[in-house]
Length: 203
Length: 99
Image (cartoon, rainbow over all chains, first blue to last red; front, side, top):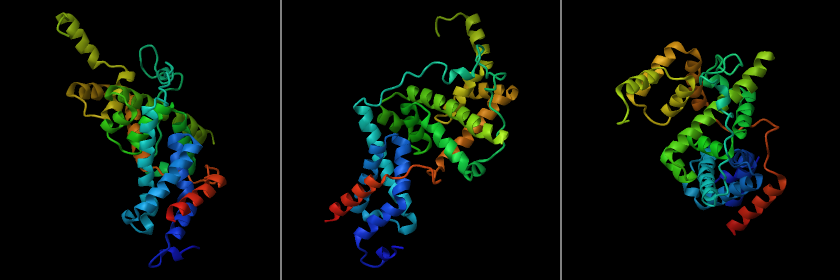
């Protein structure tokens, strides 16, 4: 255990290396999920540690350490997404018609007979969060969304950014954003139902 | 809108009260983003009264919203780890920054 770093006049080196041990993987996963690029995720984690070292005043004590580091990482990720969008590197994938629309028939009602109608899940948020297998499915389903759609959706639902801010970051109009979020929700819900509920019922 | 005949307007109004599930799914999603106008709120209510699938859809979106807000990265052993080389590079960078 490297607990000595916490004593008065703590040596910063020990702190940063302990951060790396304790939070490195977590921050890396967090960044990887949102950027889908391991090299970028590594760089963002590094930038986060360097920024954290510079601003140790904002530090809230050991218990809030991870939250604090993740808050810094969030800013780094948003900066990264903004940069990528500005350079037009994040291409808007042509959403293939039929990707989310395939869930509806010619009358634009759920294709119930083909099993596309939402099933009864019978769980609450707490129960879902406590299940490890659900987390893995959720992350897999998020990574199956088109990149730009996923960015919009994660900024909105996970980072709780305002629509205005997301539109600025992704360089899109509010209407674009609403359509993207609608598609993301349709596809994510469906993906979770097949992959999580489906396996659970069979098992 | 101004050039529409009264009959056309009425039929548009009626069809707005009989929306498809796809329309309602879009409205349900939009309601997470902005307050819906009263016409849309009525549309959704009326549709919910007859459509269990859209009711479930709305409930599941709320559930997912809550789950995502509270989500922390998966920590199971087979989830990705910071690669060793990157870890080493990071250590050097952090040390460098402190000198």
